[in-house]
Amino acid sequence: MDYKELANLIFPNVKDSSYYEEKYPERNLKEGAMVVRFAPSPTGFVHIGGIFTSVICSKVAKQTDGVFILRIEDTDQKREVENGVTGIIDALKKFDLKPDEGMIDETNSFGDYGPYKQSQRKEIYQSFAKKLIEEKKAYPCFCKQEDLDNMRKKQEDAKLRPGYYGAWATCRNLGLDEIERRIKNGEEYIIRFKSPGNPEKKIKHHDVIKGNIDFPENDQDIVIIKSDGLPTYHFAHVVDDHLMRTTHVIRGDEWLSSLPIHIQLFQALGVKIPKYAHIAPIMKEENGAKRKLSKRKDPEAAVEYYSKEGIPADAAKEYLLNIANSNFEQWRRQNKTASIDEFELQLNKMSVSGALFDMIKLLDISKAVISRYSKEQVYEMADTWAKEYDKELQNLLEENKEYSLKILGIERGNEKPRKDIAKWSDLKDNIEYMYDNRFLNNKIDYVYQNINDQEEINKILKEYIENKFDISDDKQTWFNKIKDVAEKFGYAREVKEYKQNPENYKGHVGDVSTVIRIALTGRANTPDMYEIMQVLGKDSVNARLNKAIS
Image (cartoon, rainbow, N blue to C red):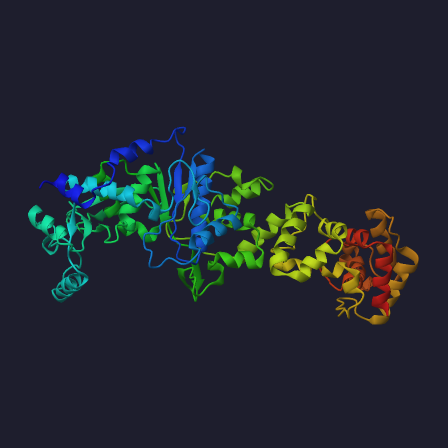
């Protein structure tokens, strides 16, 4: 028996690797186009770090006219959860991340380089493993788990590096006759890669994010095909990235230590090594120290958190771009209304050590993003969210859609639009005072400010209702009338006048307008009061001010 016969004995009905090389040819893309993939395992929880990776992959693919692939790495089937693939697909949909190729449900995919689920590519991996066996670069290993455990104990007792390498690789040098005999006897085996590495030597590599790095060569004879015929992650990702013609492997830096193995496998297969970009994890500050954002400790680590809170996908993606590239913030200041598609992400400008997650910053960005939406967009997005998470808000919005649209249109579309809504879960509190059936029928806790004498408040409100308020006034006339009320009761018409001679006045026009605002809405801080009155209308304004007086 020779090695070709051994390969045929192990994989008797597997196509030659040349078949797959022809089936999945080089992609016909323009120069510089990036082919990238998000390749999660369907083990349940989708971490915001996975969305971070997907945002980066989607962005660089789009800006280079490349391809963004969703590939599912499900070779570790013991850890797989029911509907795990669906959970990943749904998470990407929630963030409006649309792969150009990949899985569309638990079993189906689209694209010319599939299947995109590793458990459906079993024969492809076996084909390339067969090639390695033929070339004496891989071999069957019959060691049982008990043997491996005993070997590890001996290594630990001798204070040696644990693993299957060198003299410890007991099946590496088995004769072909013995291998044939043991296979035909039905002994269980796995396939190991025969590493040519020497840990005394170093490999040098340029990571697109980390820069120039070097590692000791790998000398471990790693498993490439398990006893169930499925590959390990190490082997599967190399075969997949080669055949899918991936140009850049963008992944978390927890895989950085595996790079020597992966480079060796690419070299052993005789194929081009893609560029690697290892992303530092998103960090959290705690007690003055940094740690990884944890799915156990931090609710914001879960994709579901953003859905429940109602943070728009646009805002979350914009925030992630903000922490991906430090120059994004300056770009946004210079391009206030531009789509994030116009920003050019640069992998070599990503943080080497990991960006800090800042919820305050995220919510500020979300306010700015929502401020750029039209009233119709706000209505549709908020209503869609409310249908799932807040029926009371849904009823509020839908009981009179046209009126709700008017409310949502206040201070929208201006040069300086309102920025008081950070997420849809905030919206009800921000608008419910505008609905008469809630405001007029409920007890309002009026908390007045500089002017807080009830008799003085009533005088101001009566004067305004009886002699000044006219719903048809333009904005300047409207404000001049509030100044008239202020002047009548001893308040300065202008804030500047009051600051120059405070002893001459009780206060200023701002104090008087605040009385009207609180009486009208029950709040000291609201969007533009003139616009609020225009939306409420004459009867509602009168009813509200009279309620405050009574």
